Image (cartoon, rainbow, N blue to C red; front, top):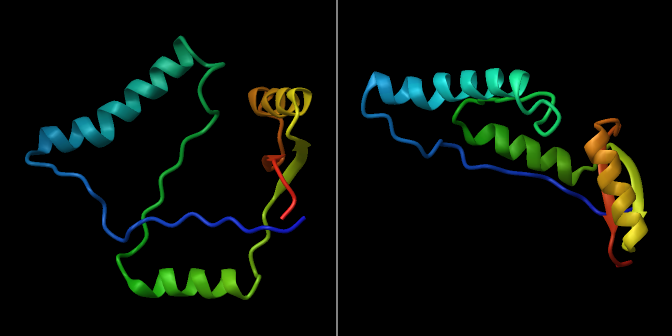
Length: 112
């Protein structure tokens, strides 16, 4: 199928917390509000899970990740590849909305 995708983020977070209350509202209250509201009101429109990962602030992790990507050690899990047609895009959205995809849903735009 070809192609590679890797998502990279900076080493340091970009948020400010001037007090304990502002940090709690940023990290705790917002997450709790989303969890409660998703269970009570909008369960079908929100993701099934949320995740957050924090890695140490070192260059070694980024270097190792890029080395593994360059060596071809990563394999993308792709559910299906749909054509860039009206029916293909509708089918792709249906799989994403149903939450039954077993990997990334890809819409193929062009051959490179």
